[in-house]
Amino acid sequence: MLIPYFTFLHWLTIAFFLILFIFLTILSIKAANNNTKMLLSMIFASFLITSFGAVIGLVVLEKYTKKAKLLDVKQRRVLINETLVLKGRVKNIGKFKINYCKLEIKLVNNGWGGGGFTKGTFFKPGGLNLFGSKDKKKERPNVVKATRIIIKDGLLPGEIKNFSAVIPYPPYFKNTYLNYKLYCH
Image (cartoon, rainbow, N blue to C red; front, top):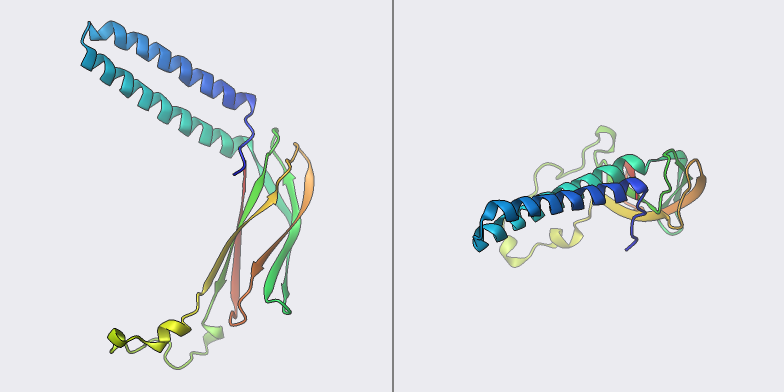
C-alpha cells in the first residue's frame, strides 16, 4: 500500500486537531470535578470528535490539493490476447506533489446489439433450478472493472508523465461503453 504524501497543510490540520483535543481535555478535567467516570467519558467524546474532524479534514485536503488531469487518452483493442490498452498522459494541475495516481476503469457490455434482440433476452425459464441449471455455468459478466496504478514514483506540480493500462476485453462484448476515473494521492 502506498502512503499519501502530506503537504504542510496536512500537518497544519493534524496540529490544529491535536491542540483542539488538548484544549477539550483540559476543559473536561475542570468540568468533571473529581468524577472519574464523567472525566473518562468526556475525554473519550473529545477524542472521537477531534479524530473524526481530523480524518474528514485530511480527506478533503487530499481531494483538493492533489489534482491531476488525463490528457490524450487513446484506447486500442488487442485481439491476439483479448485486451484493451489505454494510453495517455497524466498532468499534475495542482500546486503540490502527487505521490501516486490510480486509474479505475469500467468496461460495460451494452448487450442490446443496436436493437437486434436475441431469443430469450427477456424471459428465461427458472423452473428446476433445484437440480442445477446449465445456464449458471454459461453466465458471463457484462462489466469488467479494473484498478491500475499508473503513477508510482511521484508527479511534481506541472509535470506530465505517460501511462499505459491494460484490462481484459472479453470476446463476446459488443457495443461497449468505457468509463474511467483518476484518483491521485
